[in-house]
Length: 106
Image 1 (cartoon, one colour):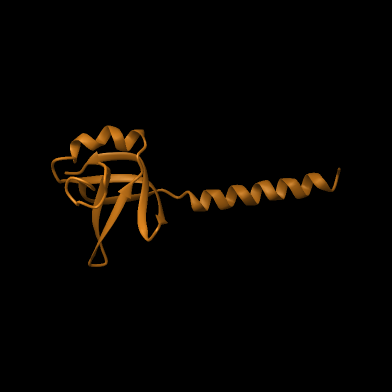
Image 2: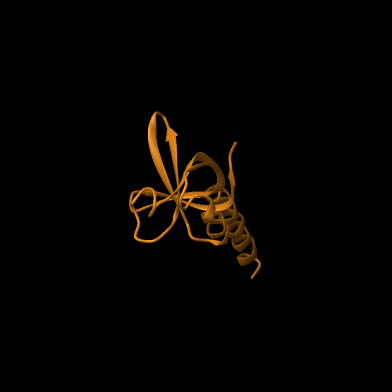
């Protein structure tokens, strides 16, 4: 039991450090649009942000969470400059953003 506790505690610390690194939040600024109505890329309404990175247009598709759903009315029928903060990952070759905050940028 004495040998198990230090090993277990190191595993927990290591896992915590890995999760902290992987869960880094980023801020994306660009044109907020509806992926269905404006971009014609999805079968249902979904927020998307088209940003310019290194001279190329990159589309971030927002996960349908409470933050994204509440904000959708702002960009469904109009394109607005927005700023979103959250975690980004890549799924099926597309950038997916799980937003913790979205706001209209000025």
